[in-house]
Amino acid sequence: MGAAVAYGVGTLRGGPDPGRLVYAGRQGVYIRDLDSGEERKAADLPKDVTFGMASSDAKWFAYASEQGALTLLDLESKQSFQVSEQLSVPLGWSPDGRLVAQELFDDRDIVLIDPNGGVRVIWSRGSLNVRFPVWLDSDLFAFFDEGNQRSLALVRLAESRSSVSQIGVGLPLAASPDGKEILIRRGKKLIVAKLEGRRLTAERTLFRGAIGNTAVSDQGFVAFTASGSGDGDGLWVLQSGEKKKKVLSEQVRWLEWTRDGSTILYSSRGAVYALTLPDGKPKRISKKGVDVFDVIGFTVVP
Image (cartoon, rainbow, N blue to C red; front, side, top):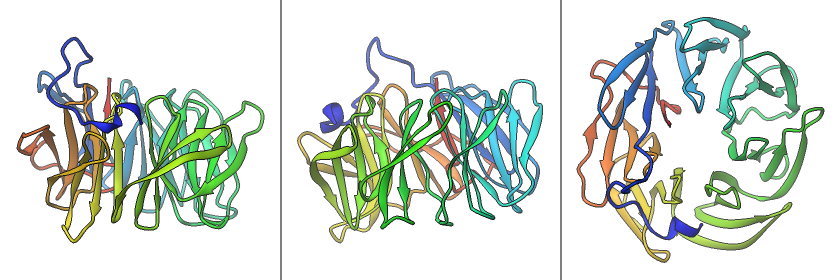
């Protein structure tokens, strides 16, 4: 993955700022400036919300209720509109602000929602195993197609009709910043592969163990959760070459990098923590009294 052979050390001089943290729980949606530490409550949420995620520009927040009613909330105007009444979940926002969601009834379609208007089916499938898309660019994402021999699929979002191509086996976890390489979980292996057209090439194993979530920074630095080599649960980073370093020994629910590649943000026990590399100590940065959602829970935006 190019820069993925190292991990972020300190703040990049002259580089981007750390960005903004957007996190949510039933108490509401919060936005924290990671440079200044200033924080504000962006919106309230209904009490029955169990799952939500912000768009990549923090303009929209998609959330689902306990019954699966899917709603889009404009974080600037505070206006909201319901997309479906039941059995739907948001899966992920595209880099240009479109939402991929799955309907958990009838033919269990995966749909593309443009907050500015329009909903269309991009994939009809029969699996109830919800997975998150890994974006390669604004119109292309990798997805786990459990219904087709557990294959890795590429979904192209053409304007008139989307196309789906099965290109290999495994669960896509993350992509390099340029979208040319994919991190894949296959069994108890973390694999990196190059994407050439509709083929995976130059595969190599980076880690052996029970892989959880994975995050790649804008600089290509890699962090992942795993239980491996008899070393228990924890958070790992890739160092020079293919060496790994365990930086945290606890169960982590979700993780993201700050935009400058200096710090890993992770959720654990209902809160968001920051771990600055190489030798920082975890620091809680989410507001006390807010129980951050277990699934997704937070994101980092410019």
